[in-house]
Length: 227
Ligand code: ADE
Image (cartoon, rainbow, N blue to C red; front, side):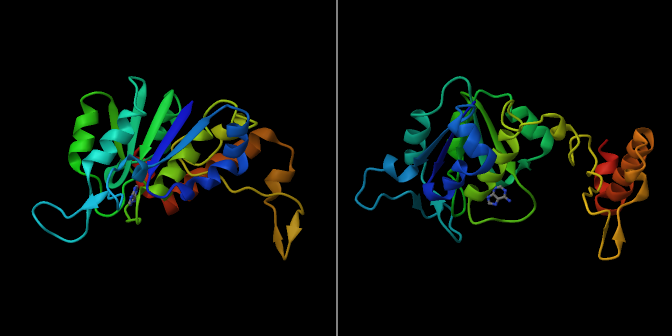
């Protein structure tokens, strides 16, 4: 897989060299490219934004630098991801879909967003997905893109060492994950649930399922209806 990011803050993406994604990059499992939007401007001030037509607060990112940047990256195989609080919700299911795409380009907007014509123009040619991390507003798409890249990247074969561990996580089966414990068996008066020490694999699996259902009903009842 190849992932390209276009941003006015390339330094946000230094973390791509850390931890599992860093290893995947070093091993060539995922190729990353980070591109400074301002290098696609031609004026002395390297302008990327302007005031909104129709008035209102804030600034909007101009289409021309985006057009030049994306033209240099996009192929017929590309899915363009635009992180935006106005997008569809980014879920584990979306991460799974994106993990099968050979080339992702993330367009990180700042200010009040990117001129809508950029999204409309590339939608005529390739798949464009406007995706939101959740119902809150970040200062720009960079942190959201990084979260999405991590969620997608760890599903790419060869990135996470033991793929079985991926199946047992929160959201993979539509439920929250069961609680986990390790040694010691007793800590500050809190004991590990005895069933986990029983060696009875059937009983352990049943207990974990029960915990998943109880936790999901208590913390995220909205997920139960989605199953
Ligand atoms: N950009 C700003 N806020 C965002 C959010 N909640 N999700 C994705 N991108 C964003």
